[in-house]
Image (cartoon, rainbow, N blue to C red):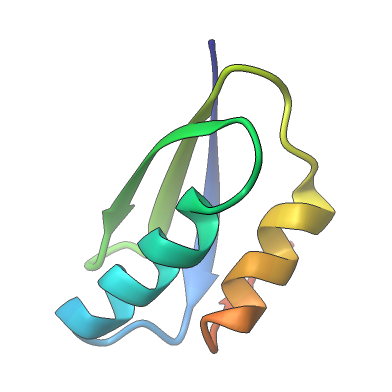
Length: 68
């Protein structure tokens, strides 16, 4: 299992957390998503490596930005 943590900007409430969690969870191979609203940290657990481009696209689909 692989865990990678990203930083997402623009999240301000529980609805934001749910949106990001839903979009990232839908990616192939993702087994879990943990979001810390106060820091913007999004930890993605997966069976196989999930590319940063895929995570970025999912976060942007939810309406937020993945920082570099």
